[in-house]
Every structure is written in C-alpha cells, then in structure tokens.
Length: 258
Image (cartoon, rainbow, N blue to C red; front, side, top):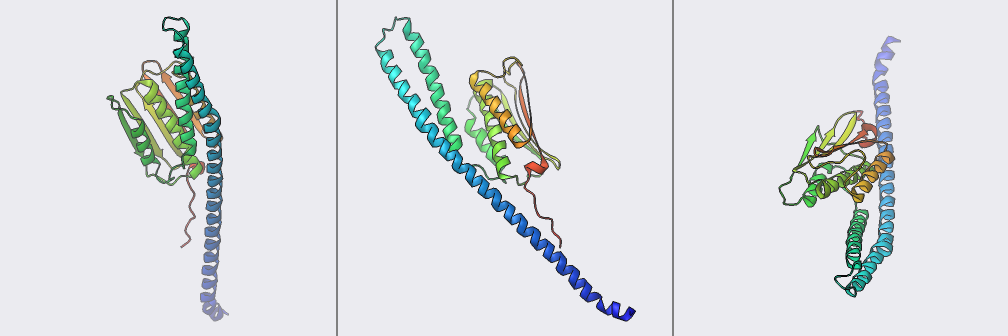
C-alpha cells in the first residue's frame, strides 16, 4: 500500500497543478469580463456626456451669445451719459462670463477623459494650461508608486483637481499652487493647495463661480464614496484634500498563482 501511494504521488501533483491552473484561468477570465464591463460603462458615460454637451451648446451657449448681441445693439442706442448705460454694460460683462463658463463646461463634457495610468502627467499638463506667466509657481508632487486607477475614479479625481486648480489660478491670486498625489496601500489622496488670498467660512468661495465649483467638487466626492475636506483662511490660502479608499480608487489585478 505504501509503495502504491508513493508511486501515485505524481498523479496527485498533476491534479493539484491542473486545479491551480484552472482556478487561475477562471480568475483571469473574470477579471477580463469586469474590465470589459468597466470599459462599456465608461463608453456609455462618454456618450451621455457628449449628448449633454450638444444640448448645452445648442440651448445655453448659442442663446447666451444671441442675448449678448441683442443687448450690445441696444446699448449702442443708449446715450453714453444715460444712467442705463452702466447697467447695460454690467449686464454684458455678466453675460460674457456666463458664456465663457458655458463654453468651458461644454469643453469639459466633450473631453474623452484621461488615461487611468497617467494621472500625474495629466495634472501637470492641466496646471500648465491654466498657469499664467505672472510669477505664480506650479508644482506636482507624487508620493508612493503611481498605480493604475479605475477609469471612472481617475476622471472624477481629474475633474475635482481641475476645479480646484481653476479656482486657485483664477480667483486666489497665489504665489504658489501645488498638487500632491499620494498612492498609499489603503488610501489614494489628492491635495491641491495655494498660498493665495483664501476665503472665510461664511463666504464659501471668491464669487459665485467659485462657490458653484466647490459644490460640484463635493457632489463628485459624494458620488464616488470619497471624503473631501476644504480648508481656507483669508489671507493664508486654501487647501482641498480628497481621500479615496484604495478598494475604490485602484484597478484590481488578478493575483498570480504561479
């Protein structure tokens, strides 16, 4: 009996290896299906964003542009010394800002998103695009080894960073704007800080556009199950920190069995 058992161990070893190989194959197929599902979800989301962008452009941007042209024509008929002239000019300034913001939103919606493996470089390019040659310094600091992120999370993180950077460059008048990305085992962290003029707790932001931007960031963070902290003090600056649990942030990889 002992001799038969010893002679049969290669068969048991082969069966064990076959079982391990089968389990590994099934896990790889499952991972492949999950990735395909995520890509399909991402594609559906992009198509929906393109549809909304078209509607915004047709309904909001073009209508606002027509309104501006009409008011400009009316303002040309009003004497320069009329009390109504400054009111019309202020209305035109507001409409110009609304038009610029509307075009910016359409452009964001039509963006095809970012490569989930390229978040640090994507944020560098974003900051350089927003940066103005006025003496402001811009830096991106990466802590830990960059990891591949889930597509939807990477795009949401990018949009929150874009909103934070836009507020910093446009409204804060900073000397330094810094983005920090931390790829930790249990948490992904995004931090955008500036040393600009900041704002008080009761203000919530420098102007309506900034306040709406902060609210959009909060909505995105809630939707992805992340934590968003906004800290700001007048004359000191602003710090926006996003914390995303690793199980949500990072793309899971199949563990190797060989």
